Length: 165
Image (tube, rainbow, N blue to C red; front, side, top):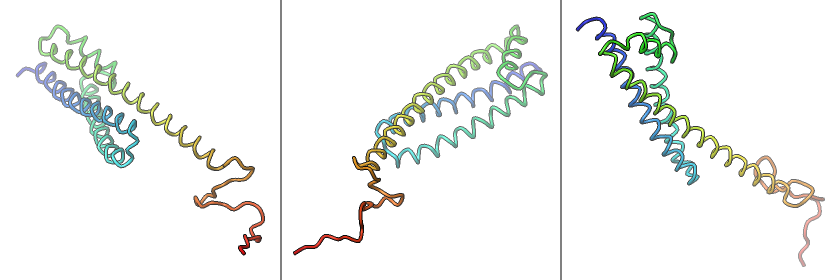
């Protein structure tokens, strides 16, 4: 195997792994969206651990790819990857690399959009929860109905009890 093919194989292997991880992340984000809509907190806790694990793996493989780019004289970023592909576009070994890179960018954009939508769902739930708390705390009265401990507060003179009889 010549040097060009060996370098291409290294990049292809990394990007193909990254594609697999990004596809798994996109599936996880789609599942997260369903869980957020269903307001299933327990499932969200489990899925968040899975998502964080995938993000850790993606971050590491991205670092590996960027290190490889620098080792071959390119910048450690998306621009460096584009420069590599452009510089080697005449090499047949790099044709698959271009396809993989395009695929990775598409999957990443899809995952980013899912994440954006999920952030909106989370913000909507936070707003709804805050509105509910505001109603419960005001209770239509001048004072707060619930204390910081979640227990009902009795307003007025607490020393006066109700006398039955």
